[in-house]
Length: 257
Ligand code: NAD
Image (tube, rainbow, N blue to C red; front, side):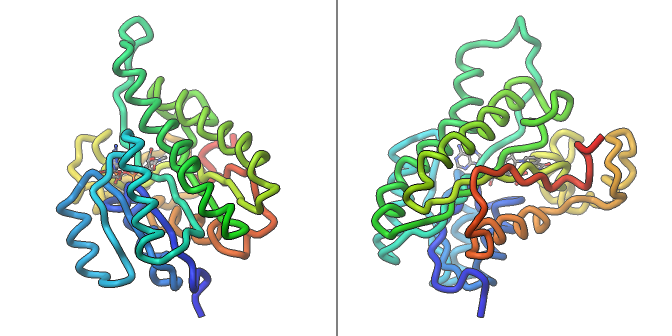
């Protein structure tokens, strides 16, 4: 049997990178997945490929009504929600402090912090009714060190880690576990764009990552979306039944020293 047999999972940002790898791993482990993403074309192609194991809904996680509709879709189709993976996100420019504008600040905080919290808000009644659940969010090494990401992105990801810990305590009495993952350098569109690569080039850029000694990543291997998806499977599964309020770092040792 699979490690997620019988579970229903909602995954955001599932059309690319870490989210896409997670959709595939969750399905391979026996879960039914409902995914949301801005990218309708990519999402529909994936839903067609996976058939009844995957439902797709065009979703902007900055829009609370969209989040609610995505979670409702899981309930309509499967009658339950066991796992929520708040993963949608994007690379953000590194604004100088004196150039930050309200709209930019709001965008980054909505996408990387508010979306995850509102996802939890709308998943909560269903998980509470079911007597438990597992929530995961994708934070970043940028949320734990000050030199791994752009300014506002790093601030939002740090807040996401603290949100995870704070909310985990509030939801523990309901047996709802709340954890996050802090990926290091992963070859996806987000990371590829930082090197001027398009998405497909980024996915083929693994060997390039190994040349990036400047990042001082101790393990001489390129991180892949599957490495994060594997961590997500663990945190989503009953194997992690005693784990909550944690930020699991998956970074090849980048932040150790
Ligand atoms: P990606 O660009 O490959 O995938 C992100 C997905 O999120 C895309 O499909 C995109 O369409 C979707 N998305 C963006 N904005 C959205 C919105 N408003 N509503 C719904 N969907 C939206 O990037 P990725 O690297 O797989 O990123 C996934 C998560 O991992 C992000 O939260 C990112 O911050 C985080 N992360 C990535 C790295 C890395 O090195 N790649 C490192 C640390 C953290």
